[in-house]
Amino acid sequence: MSLFNLYNEIKSEYENLIPLRQEGLVLFHLYQKQKDGDMGKEFSENEIINSLRETRHDLKTFQKEQFNQTVKYFQKYFLWRDEKNRLYRFKPFTKKWCKLIENILEETFNPTRLQKEFLYLSSTLTEQTFDEWYTTTFESYSQRVDTQINALYIQIDRLVVDFRKQISNEHAYDLNALKTIVDTLDDIRSKTEELNNAFNRAHDIQSKLLNSNIITENVLLNRQRADVLSFFQEIRGNLKIISKRIDSVRPRLNEYIRNINRRDFYMRFKRFFNYLLEKSVAEKGKIRFPGGMPNIPVRYVQQPRFIIVKETFDGVSLSRFKTVKSKIPVTNDVETENRFLLEKERIDIQKRINLYLLDLENRLKAHQEVDFSDFFYEILKKENGNISVCVKLTHKTMSKYHREINSFGVSISNETVGISEYPMIKIWKTVIYRKT
Image 1 (cartoon, rainbow, N blue to C red):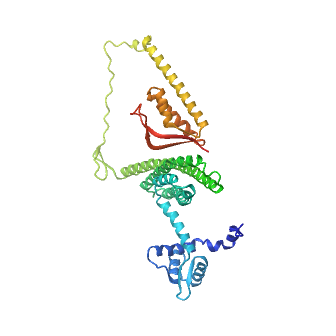
Image 2 (image 1 turned 90 degrees about the vertical axis):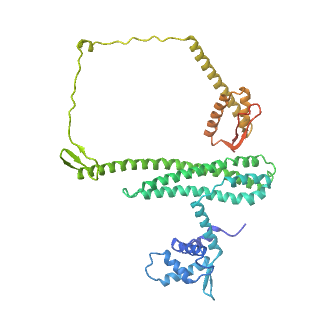
Image 3 (image 1 turned 120 degrees about the horizontal axis):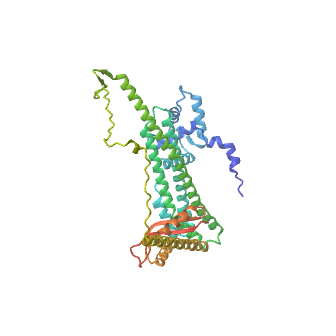
């Protein structure tokens, strides 16, 4: 057992390894200048002091003692100092630290699409041994996926902060900017759906691992297999968190924009009406509006109102109560019989669909997964090609197993399948599986 204890060591070195904002921004400023080619791999103390002054806007004077303390602080873990030439360069820890933050923020700023990478992850598992696949493919890929999903969540928080900034001034907000924020939220939603679609293929990897008996006797490989299975489960959970976050935020933003639109309309109408009252004048029986608006005449012509009474008018008949003859419905025996047969057929179809659903449920109990595509065509044959029954069965099946998301999963790929008996009917390859 190692004598090294991280907690005990970090207690004494925390302030040296984790710089405060003021010192940390100086290191990032130097790192960016070096990356942009504005500074070489080695740099002078004046370069450090210049970065200090550019990042510390609160410093109004040249504070030599404070600058010297900061430079000395950097030399413990962050900068090498060449005593002879009086030059500095980054230590490996500084490069790794800055690069790590750069990667996280860059992914947050511009998330990538992972569909192709995930297909590669799935296909390479069959070509490589599991231990090779785990170390060369899965470990690096899983880190990128975690970063991508975290980037989406951070973007949502940024949008909410931007929205609040926009509406902080009741009269200075930009309505187009608010709409752009909502559109960006929709874009994040689409990216989340893309990730969800990509991770539907995770079922292929999970099936391979669950059905594999090769690595069951190796403790290390078993632990790695458990890591892979739990990783996909955690990713699905994180994607659900993002979707729920968007579902909770977006309606409130839309409602706020609708309120702003209504308030803007009333404010503009009030300003327009007050402007007319202030700038319009009455002259020669007309109201003259400002700004070239057409004048309107001011007059009131009372329209005559006449009551036309016929010569044969009978005042008593107006108060006489008029009855409406009741209509006796005409029954049609043939139509009644047809309706009865149609209703009987509907009930029979519903009973058969319920039996098919029960059969599917029993198969899932007996096995970890069921190929619903095969099951679909099996029922189509039993129904002699009655596609209406199969469509209703599919709808009920998808609704049932999407509701039971904690116990079951549905994997749908872009591959289409069919059978020779009904060549015109094709569906996507669909697998329903029980989650472990």
